Length: 199
Image 1 (cartoon, rainbow, N blue to C red):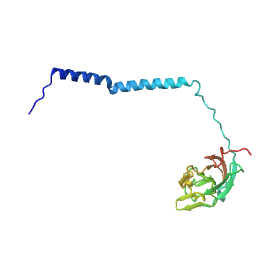
Image 2: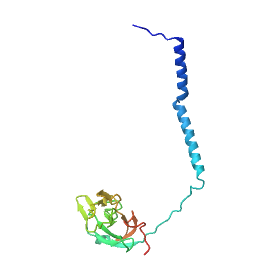
Image 3: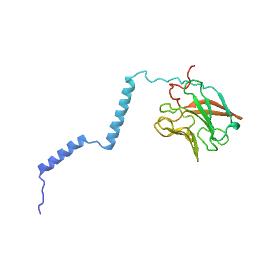
Image 4: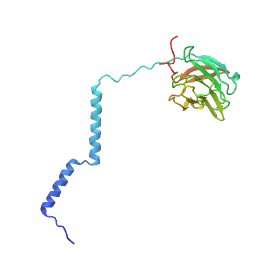
């Protein structure tokens, strides 16, 4: 068994190495203090580089027309009724349906089962007329004849399957006694840069 003995020269070498090592290393406290002050300095510099660029934008309130669509008492379960909204221009075809007691997001009526949606697929504008399906608790619109997109009408028209990546635009409804009015849109109608176009 051999025992290693360290010489005074080796000890001095280790002390110098440790001192040099400590010059490079930071404690956690030092790191947090330095990084915090660096972040403040960077944000101050970036704000001062672009003077006047932060401005409050004016909100534009869009007023949709209030349009009579149907009478609640005349709607039959799972039979869609077609209409145009918000105008009579391209891609404004829509449907309203009473979903037979199946509650839906945005639904109106005593059972919250009356909803309305635009008929144009959000993927490439395929027509969805005649594709409403009520099976068990499911209420869907689709499949789109172009790329088989399907939408769940119980959950604000979200995409269930297919190539679409945006929900189907939902027509916002208002119930006034027995009369149902369309009062707005939730989502952008396919093929338009804004829902309300000048005729």
